[in-house]
Length: 110
Image (cartoon, rainbow, N blue to C red; front, top):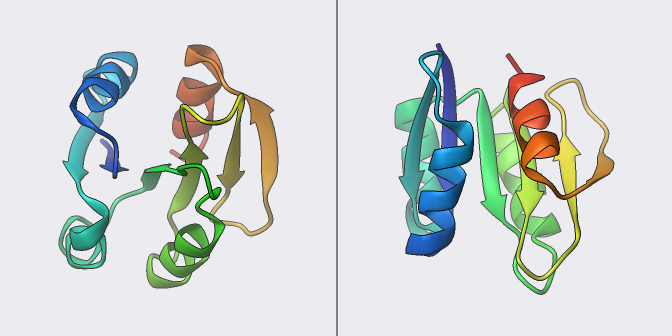
């Protein structure tokens, strides 16, 4: 079972992401950015999908990557047309934002 933590999205965006990632082999949990450190420690997700916001979310992604070794971090936002993926193996790459690339980025971590 692939454990995915969705962080910082509003209600409508969160429902959309849950709908996109729905599947028998994916367990989706959500939390706000203020609780993410505690939730990461408890859930131990394989993938974190973060709301990047207008500033890009790079600082939060770096902190969470360090605090959740072995997890892939995916940054996406309504403010951008791409998503950034920080694989557990290190580095970062960018992909166009779409339903397909979100699913592939999340499933690629499993």
